[in-house]
Image (cartoon, rainbow, N blue to C red; front, side):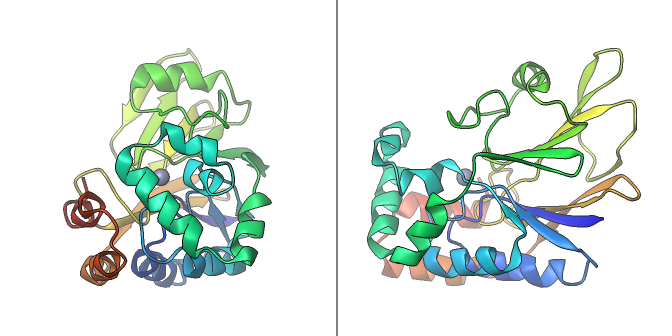
Length: 242
Ligand code: ZN
């Protein structure tokens, strides 16, 4: 089976469309989504429409969840909370019902999907360091767990002898005596100093993983964000990928 895995779209329709056009050329059988469809960007309803139509498995992210559970916004910084209140105003009733149905975690074939971290998928911990990754390896049984949330593509590896490392390559072979915790990066708001949209291909026949980057017209997204009076900080970071 050949999967595309997308995450952290953040209401960025131009990035999502560019990624979807790239996915169509990759002979993928299913598209999986790790959440944060909305928040930050100007097109929440349109992005939900595409994800709902095209993805076979979708889980919730902290921004999706905050649209339903407003106490969650307390954990957000000022820019994130401003954009969530704007998002709640514009979301259609159907979009809200759809977000309310999304699970926190899902197993697909022999791998696991969670937005933030497998140790407790509803508290939205970040996995940024090797130590945080090591802690999380004991919280999933599958060989591979895919996460999003940090917007930074990363591959953490656990060997059979319980040694741990961070892999920098974009294309790896999944070895049968190793386990993996993989962050696929963000479609709509990358934060690894690369403004291009990020997503991944996972091929369970060949056991190969590939991170892909797709350029898109972020100026168009920025213009729409300005027209919607979304925070400048969020508008500017799309150009720098930081
Ligand atoms: Zn996010």
